[in-house]
Figure 1 (cartoon, helix red, strand yellow):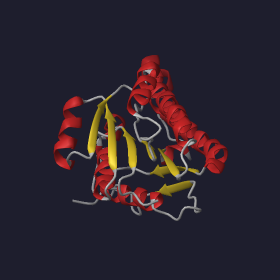
Figure 2 (figure 1 turned 135 degrees about the vertical axis):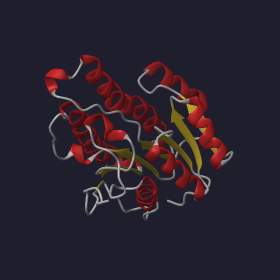
Figure 3 (figure 1 turned 90 degrees about the vertical axis):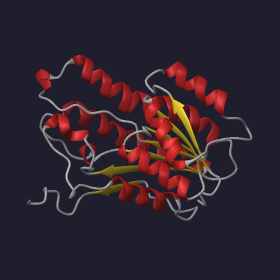
Figure 4 (figure 1 turned 180 degrees about the vertical axis):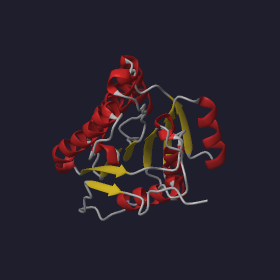
Length: 238
């Protein structure tokens, strides 16, 4: 796909990876609808990247709001070409110490929110004559478990299964589906589990470059799953 003037949706755009993906797409000339819940962070992204960023303050766990935004934003002459499902939350604790509210928050954001927007956008992508691409950001914890991560792993294993079924379903509509499973990323995401970020973790701009590569593959080439790990995941010795 040639990304110049393509229309992309990036969810979770205010965080480290979502922001990096948005900036990378902008660098290739794409128009990015950057979705997040933090209006101030969205405005900072727009200020940094310019008018090709369209800030969208939206809670993906609210199905009706998602449906309304999609129907009010896109038309037959203005369909999205790319959807990056990056929004996600995670809390790490023993299963018998995990509040049900945290379980539901992860399910609602990481799975239900992804379904709400993907189901709407896929309908539009099916009507296009040119190719489209959906990228779901999974996790290495969608391929292997870890202690105190039952809830989060459940959602990321779900992202993997959702992506696998979806690529089979949509490939004959000229829609690619890719699941990207990163290892630890240099953000504050794992702080609740006592893991501090460090420079040996994956860096958001580097992951964004990989995602651009996946998007720009030849039209009849599909990378349906990609796992990326730090070579040395241990924190550097100071």
